[in-house]
Image (cartoon, rainbow, N blue to C red):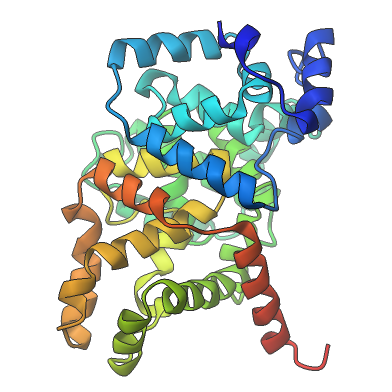
Length: 355
């Protein structure tokens, strides 16, 4: 229904034409890449984003929502090309649970990776006799979702799958190898897909979403995110920013898990999957928005607290806020890609003076 009625943006016309000729339906990688979120936003995009946020916050009919998603998934990429605003609203409202794994893979383009790598790449990596970081992976397995039914049993199916995928990825990308936060990401993926698919999703996350910098030696991407968050906090909540600075509380102390696991640690799982829906569709900006939302919703309490109290409040904050409330407050925070780019340039200039 929507495929026929939604207007086609000018910059998406070539993609839609490709879809009509069968290229998008046939998963042409170059065409699909055009469907990712734009790097730059203008005032028109900001207004569209405001309308999408309002639409995402409206009460939804679960039956209608599910029926809409069933239609969309007939040809998800073509729908997203023809109706990007409608698709964005529906994703922000939450992907239906039983479709989530499939849609995540479509958003991340992980199913197109066999066009780049051998079709049996996972089996090749899994069967490699030795793997870097294997001892560290084995040691951490039981710490990943220890209360979840899939992972709580030592040497159970879940722990074995987790070991297989993390081990295979360390063989595939020895430069990154393994870092503790990767276990939670992989664990969440395995709740929605097979080992092979989770492995391809890891590749996509670390390559297409540039997450490898979160886990490499020196954590270069994480340091940039800390710098950006600090600047954003100063822009949006200057009083709180000054108070946290006076108490010696910096993003390095409280925000590392938010970025390294894309808000998996310490968040209710109902909130985690909503954030991941948006993250895979729109990119890292949602993590900054969630971080700012947590600080904003707890600002009054934080302003009266000292160092240890602040850390405890921020540790407990994700579990004390209802999912819909957190998502709506996060999406209401104005944040342009250009702002993040400008702060990144400032960070680069400080990191490499004279360049």
